Image (tube, rainbow, N blue to C red; front, side, top):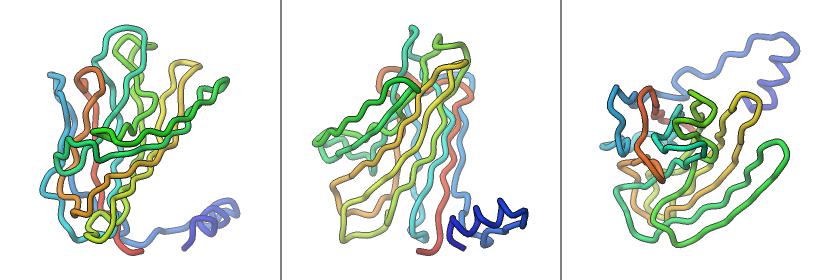
Length: 192
């Protein structure tokens, strides 16, 4: 059922059930007491159409500041990535586009340890046609955080300029380790 049909049914009070198995859990990881430099999902099965990652994350970056969540595919550290982002905090909007870099910045608005206490950034990332060997890999991401009345939200897209099937994903902080209780869940999406 298209998303607009689901929303219309929900508004009219009808219970809507999504198709069974549309999203299959592949792996989940939560950071323990010791912060880590990165999170990697490896040996990703090639049995789905798309991938989705849902995250709850915080950086160990010191100071009253934000940090960024970055992504690399298949361990590629070359300048083979590009990104576009639109961000806002309720009063100011920003945008950026960057090409030829060594990762995709996907998590606009996740906070360092002293930013408004214990807030975590959250987001959802889709990796489209991840097993295709005839085109570059495209991602879309939505994320943000609340900082007790202020915060940020971002919408972005990214490109890995490689035709290899995606077999591993590595997430890392731009400026510090990923802290305790940060969590990442990887799902396989079936169908078109």
